[in-house]
Amino acid sequence: MERIKMKSTANEEIITNDISEEANLIADKKTIREKLNKYIDKASDNRKKIFIFGIIVLVAFVLALLTKFGGESNQIQTGLNDIVLVRGSGTISYKSSEEDVYEIMEAGEIVLDNPSYIKNATNSFSYIFLPDNSFISVDPNTELVISLTNNDINIELLSGSIWSRIQSSTINVEASSSTITAGKSIFNVYERFSGETFVSVEENNVEAVGCNEETIDIPSGSLAQVDRDSLNCSSAEGKIVEEISITSWYKRQKLLDEIFIDVRSLNLSDSDSFRSEVLSRIDKDEDLDSISKRGFPSTLDLDLTAPDLTITSPKDSDFEIKDPTLEITGRTSSKDAIITINDEEIDSVNGVFTYKIDLSEGLNEIEIKAINPLNNNETTKELKVTRIIEVITVKDVFNLYASTDDNGANLSWDITGFDNSKGYYLILGLNGPEYSANSANSVMLTQDSRNYYWTLTPGSYSFTLCTINDNACSEFSNSVSITIQEANPPTSSPIGNLNF
Image 1 (spheres, rainbow, N blue to C red):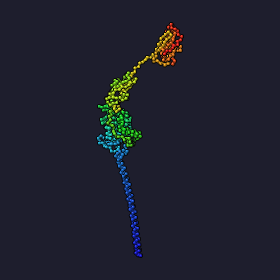
Image 2 (image 1 turned 60 degrees about the vertical axis):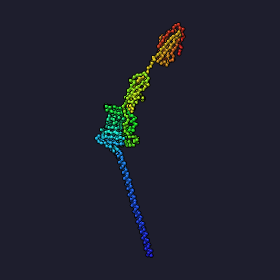
Image 3 (image 1 turned 45 degrees about the horizontal axis):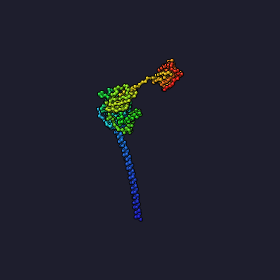
Image 4 (image 1 turned 120 degrees about the vertical axis):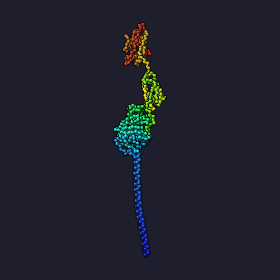
């Protein structure tokens, strides 16, 4: 019994130990699970931190890129008299004085000193914004000096081309061979390396000092070459030619003009707001972005001078002629010149031409032109030719004739130049000529009548013929007198017979 009891006690201890170990195992698992959850939570927090840190790094990187490639353009705050230079593309350099070394522009836009030098490399564009919201495009291969004095914009164009859009200030552009001055206007100035200066005007008028320091007024839509060199004084003006207007450079500038004009209409007084709006529209303009970024078409032959023109025949410019045609001959030293007569282009060989023109009666005004190959300048000669046509003038005729026989008078007449549409009165006069027609002494005849036989008794008579108007005599013929001799047999009646 005691052994059985001992065995039972041992078994109870084993069971108790097993339960205790199981309980410890459960407790250990709970502890492990709690620790594992803590690790998981900690790892999740780390991932969140890494994610947030990554976003911060990305934002910083984007901001750095924007800063490098023009992101600062919306951050610059300008003063009332600041000149702002904006980099469009390529390499743009600037400096404050002639002695300084050019510094390459890194930021998207900067405020320049007054004055400042600007230099664009090949295939490089920049924009200048001024306090009055004027906007200037600077082309590739262009160097200039800009300054502000009171309300004037002063630019010395050393080389290249600028396209100016001026709001309210006065701009003075000093080129090697001219000074160009304008108020509110849109225009381009191109300075060739050879020293020639070309000005094209898109809005309002521009003044340029040309030959002998004379001021040339260049109207909108014109292209002019100005040169005040006393040794080679030449100035010419014409219309903007297609060879220029079809270039990508011109199309790009015209799109920029549209943006400028649209923003100008908003009347933004704040120059920062104006600049921001213009640049924003430039960035968003797909047409502008698709156009090749080229400078002024410097390879074009821009000979704007008008060809000389000599009319060798006829010698006179104002004369009379009887011939129905006129032969015109002339010449010009420009072999490529276009020759027109009354706006009709005619053939020429090495500048020599011959042309036969039909003349109408009276004054013929003939205009002969020699037009340069760019079709934007011309020399004109005028002829005033009066063609005379000889006309044989027939004198007015109203003549009455008479002959007699034994029984009466045979009367006939000629009429030219008188209105006989209403017919005639043939008037008989017994005591000399009679000029009043009545039923007793006259006979009414049709307009086609040219003779009449009047039966008469012996005696003396007079006859007069008149045209009829309003049932009365209008124009009279001459009077004729006849005598019927007594020997003739008498007649009973003065009634005549019509003969046709």
